[in-house]
Image (cartoon, rainbow, N blue to C red; front, side, top):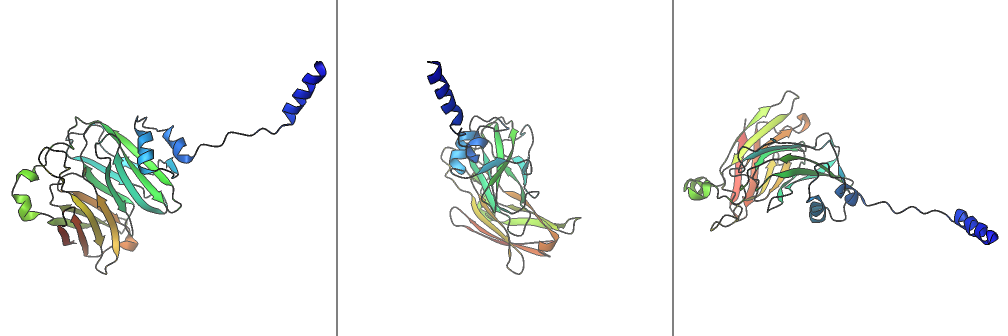
Length: 263
């Protein structure tokens, strides 16, 4: 009996020990959400299925801790400390419409400031995809009284937007680092389609280019972007557009945006 026990023990120690396979990056990220959102797992499935996802402090989301107006919540996203950013996706975990906007920085910095609507308190996140296909995620919790996505826009009840629809205004400012900053607004009601009797109506595509025709940034906006979208874009010195920037795009009804923003 003792002999057989020793043989069994010897076989156990001679057998190679295999470790459990490592969890894929997306699963690891889902179980380690620094914002502890109950919906983070759903966000992974919705936006990053099969992709590598990491939480990264270099992707910064700056927003108020408490939103004074759920229809106009100021948010700035900055992934400029991260090399090789090809695309940035912004989304809100608890909004009825999850994606807020996407942008491709092209020649601009991978940074964008804008305003969004929140239906309730929620993490607002930015995910920056680098050239290796990895999504780097940062975010911030925003406490909101809510109702931002289901409230009708003020523009939808006014005849003014019909006269000024997709009108662009803005300015180009010099930066101390030699680059430029563009701040521009597009007149549009940006209706989500969630308010009773008001169909979805929002700016969908926006492309910014310099005088030579080179594209500086491409923005894909979704319904939760606030009414009369206001965007702030930074251009490094090597990509400074000069005295004019061409803004072109359309809304989901096919109405065109075509304007020049000057210094």
